[in-house]
Amino acid sequence: MITAPDEVSITDPERFGVVFDTHYEEIRRYIGRRLDLDIAEDLAAETFLIAFRRRDRFDPARGSVRPWLYGIATNLVGRHRRAELRRYRALAKAGPPPDDDGHDQRVVDRVSAGVTAGRLSGALARLPRGERDAVLLAAYGGLTYDEIAEALGVAYGTVASRLSRARAKLRDWLGVEI
Image 1 (spheres, helix red, strand yellow):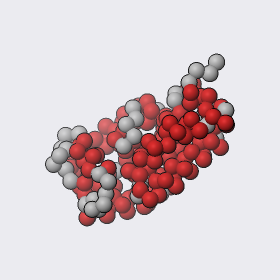
Image 2 (cartoon, one colour):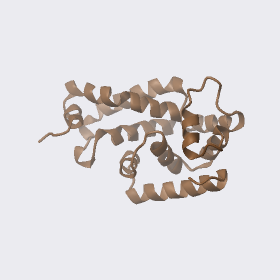
Image 3 (cartoon, helix red, strand yellow):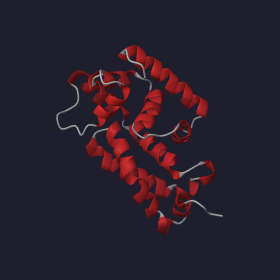
């Protein structure tokens, strides 16, 4: 019995547009926060192309389509991680660009009003990829531990460990309680 709209959309190619319409903007924003905004459109579109092609692999018993899409998007971001690291390192030196739409600042505000975007970017660049992905899925995507675990294909305990280690490192590096 099909109960979730996402499940119907995944199993019926004609209705996959529901998944796109429901989640595209959120996925695009997540990618835009992780990488340059100009690449976000392309990678978001690629995320949904991959999801459409692999829709037969989606298992609704594991949860909603949202973490599955975040997992695909995170993998695409991972392919571009060198550019992401360069971006964080550049932001650490220069701070956010004047035409920045405020995404970095919102993350900064969540951590502490006293922490600058440059310091936060530098600290994020220092985190190992798995920890950085978990932190950014929580901060930018608003995903729960369960959803992060599903998106990254790891156990819940791994997510908890990664986030705990990342918080400790960021607390030490930035000198703020996270």
